[in-house]
Image (cartoon, rainbow, N blue to C red; front, side):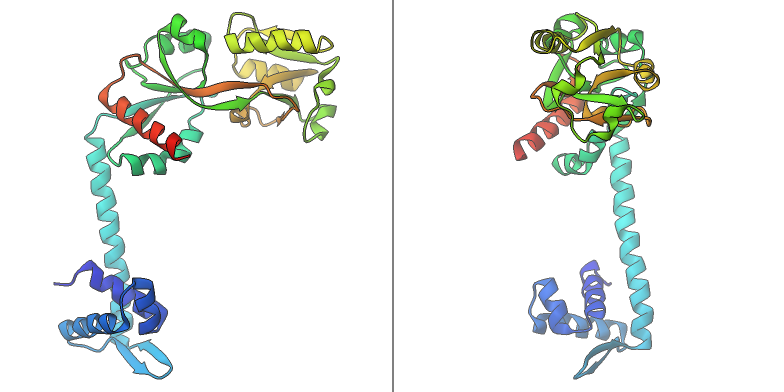
Length: 299
């Protein structure tokens, strides 16, 4: 019975057209590789290669076997992948809440690395409408229908909603402008560019970190006209796009509105971005968080 290793050796030799080149790629000696090919030809009772001073070429039988060997190896890899997926589906999933303002893309980008840390983890995206009522309800009941939500985090969330948090990074505070706004022509804004502008900022007592930012801006840059809005949803992005407004945003919300441009500002203000989860997470969520923490340490 043929082994995968024999098929891989044959395929590599056929593609390299040289015993020595194939041996270097396989990290074996040319003698050992030739012995493997000779053994394969003996088992198949047919010549697979024509040997010459110019190198190796496949015989007609070799070309036929090459096509089938490629198919067999790919089929085996797909079979393994299907079995692993079936095994993951037997494991309770980590339910990741996702909405317009709670993006999951950055986590999905990390997913191959997360799976290397814990191959048996199973993740499921659970969409929800981004309304004030939904947001409050989900954060208060994490672990019931949704396990984890990603987004800006705040120390006030623990006392208000009782959720636990894991900070992943600090997101620089940026400014969104309509693509028709004069400031959209710039690549980076200076604080002075905001002077005389109507700057939309989340209302007081909505987010402690943004409250601190408001106090700093009012003290350092009183020329900025700060205007309140109640909640981050598509309405405030529409308001920014259709009017003469600027909007406080972060890079992770770049794709919320196609007619807005997100610009960095020459200041050092940031807000924490991370994961929110139940104070007593399930074993699956604990494993998920452990994998995330391990990735943070690797960086």
